[in-house]
Amino acid sequence: QVQLVESGGGLVQAGGSLRLSCAASGIIFSFDAMGWYRQAPGKQRELVAVITRGGSTNYADSVKGRFTISRDNAKNTVHLQMNSLKPEDTAVYYCNAKRTTMILEEYEYWGQGTQVTVSS
Image 1 (cartoon, rainbow, N blue to C red):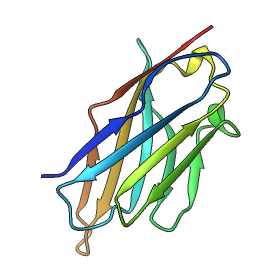
Image 2 (image 1 turned 90 degrees about the vertical axis):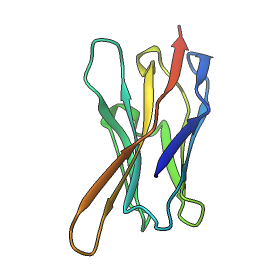
Image 3 (image 1 turned 60 degrees about the horizontal axis):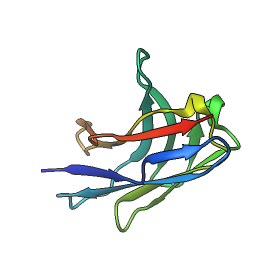
């Protein structure tokens, strides 16, 4: 059974940094894409950043220039370096992974979430 386990959340002051990590277990394949989503209270879950197996990245406009996503395909891990954090970055951050099989079956996996709180 595939599991995604996040770590690295916490409380930080505005302007500070945090590094989130997500490790996948129970798999023998690599994911086509891994990424991070977040959900603030009363808001919908939104994409923060995504990275493909080949290293292509995409970021939400709100985090461009402040957050950096990276992954280790061999270890099936993905990281999110968050710098210059703002109070509006406060949310539960979820790791996400997607895989498409050779017969075009699509699978999506989610971590349990990790809280990031940025104080002003």
